[in-house]
Image (cartoon, rainbow, N blue to C red; front, top):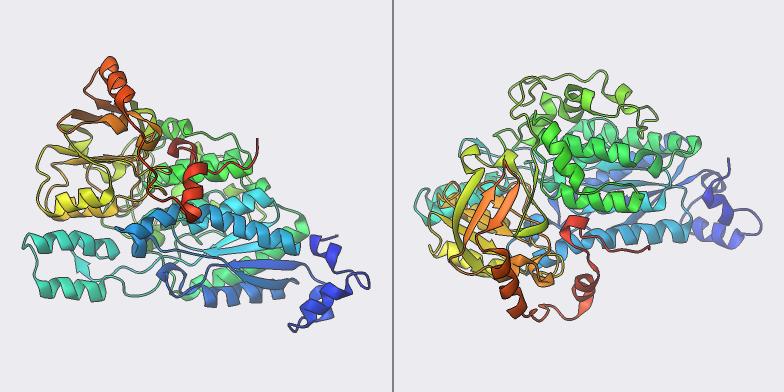
Length: 556
């Protein structure tokens, strides 16, 4: 079999390149094997990536065992948790496209034969999957694994989100300063992607559901020995993919992406899955639209509850059977013939899966809900759709009508909430936070957590053209499209307007008639861009709407 790397490593014509490799200690033996890239997003900033140095070593060992030569390079990775609630969040979603581009550049410039993608967190795994689909070479993902849960707090094992909720409790005197400090020290007991089912762990689970990881890779804890064993096995698996000629688009296609959407519905995954699945589908040239999320929401039962939908964390979900157990439970709804990176069809991968906790994973006949965890809304406030997560919303709040409290930035809303300006019956409207307007489509994580901590989660709602962390609960609607910066109806909501959120009927409505909205829009003036230079200014000009995955188009 002729590998891509052979094009530039044949002796004697390409000896100058062979010499460059030999300057780093590679041997003739190494250069006679397929060159397997390891795209490693290890750093000491992001806890979800802190262990990837050791994981990369295990992957390298597996590659060598199977007859390949590992060549490792670095990839940026930013932490949503560190960036949340301030200017840094503008930069998080835009890193997704930089990651995809970076991997494409490294693989293509060096004619590598395959790539193992090491990542764990919110935009890193989606960006890596986008790169794999774009390149269409043998590829697989090795997540770093979830963090273990922390000390018991507020009825469950704590995690990073507990601190933001506790801040609201501290401000209203529900907990003491000493309790708050203890929580800070014990909420995150070790490295890994945060223990709840946020975007990070959702996308690792969905990478597994679409067949791009080995079974159980999406949920095996970061600090377990099993994580390193999976990494080594993944190294052996990528070499097999090269030898069999199995490339990324044979795994990432419409059928496997539909499986991933259904699994997201079944586990109550993050609303951000809607952004990322659409972006991956674009790169794979697969016919997947946001309407599929609504279609499968109506037909896929919610069978697994993980925080914020319930008290269990992702390591608990792993012990209960993880993604394979969920896929086996809903197998009648899935395409089980799709290829996977194991070299076997998905049906064989999940055949031996078992459910070990019916408190966490229910049956299809007795689910937590007959419908899926995400819902797509439309209406005169969201002509091109909006996204919400009924799995994380108390059923009593699935229908909510209230007074609009309008803010043109996340900071303004957070200040009002912290200062007690939001009261029962309010609908907090945060706009100009979409892909273009933000720019970067920030998460309204802090606002939701403050409302929860101040006892307003079941008394207020929040809507935005921005997005949410996968751990948010309360009543919320995001991804409103068109966004305010594009002249969507959200731009002309006024203080005191009546807004209705109706999840069962999939509607987001402003109680203003069509002519009234048109009249307001005629008077609307587009605001000046918040950021006028650097990558974010470019991103603001190029990014598509949220209902298209906030993609950057690079083909006709």
